[in-house]
Image (tube, rainbow, N blue to C red; front, side):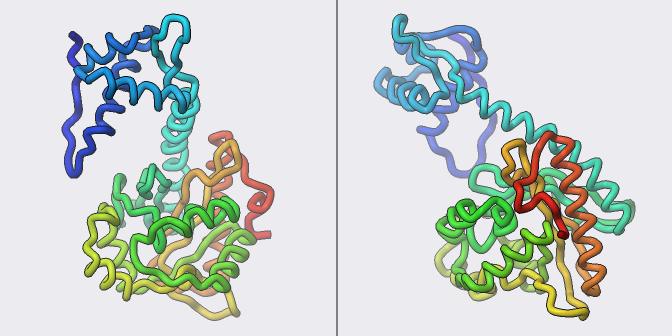
Amino acid sequence: MDDIESAPRTGRRSPPTERVVQVLDFLVAHRGRRFGLSELARRLDLSKPTCLGILSVLAEAGYLHRDPASKTYGLGPALVAVGRAAQEGYVAGPVARAHLAVLSERYGTTCTASAVVGDRIAVLEVTSPPGVRAGVKVGESYPFAPPVGLMYVLWDGAEALESWLRREPALPVRHDRTRLASVVEECVRTGYLVETLTPVGRQLHTLMAGVADHDLSAELRAALGDLVSSLGERVYLPDGDGESAVHLIAAPTFDAGGHQAMVLTLYVGTTLSSGEIARRGRDLAATAAAITSDVGGRAPVAAAAPGH
């Protein structure tokens, strides 16, 4: 029997999910070969009913292919799309880093690239000029649920926004639809988002980093919820030539299908004039457009001309 190595796991474990991963790992390790139910169950030390259930679901989803004549299983076509998406993500990372390093140097600040991975928002790249300590690390993650994650759906159309709004909130949140509509309109028009964040808000995001929403007690959720503004309230909307305290500016990259891929952020942490906010926003949007082009992506029509 082949040894199947498993990486150390921490936190909550899901034996049913581990069995699915076990099946996929085995077939990937033996790609090009096909196996029947009995042999797979024996070699993976699974009961035949359990193994059949896993194989049936994976075959129906296209992740495995079942040969009707030999009744054997092998890797399926859906994995091609999964692999291609993962490959695009890994290609985008180094490309993003090269562009963000230039932006970090220009403004003397930290820049990041992050994306939605499963049901979490993960930090993928971080750049900072010499002497500047980054306040965020690669691998940090946040729950992708209101009130966290607006910028990851904002440029992806109404359906993506509504789907995010329907997710179970990580914290109690108020929906101000009128304000949210104004935010979407402004950010789609300019190609970037400007977020003003209070010290309390920054502490909130620090607390949420690496914490799954289901790990929060009801009491803590309620207490943190009292610190959260309504959706979109922290987004800067220009109303004149005054100054505003800015936490960060964000802009999206897009994949080959015209959907949001990564979000780039340029950290500010100070008060800026409206003109300087617009200048940095245009620079970040231009950087995002360059990354999109370099990885073979395309911006949707509504987001194709940032700043115009």
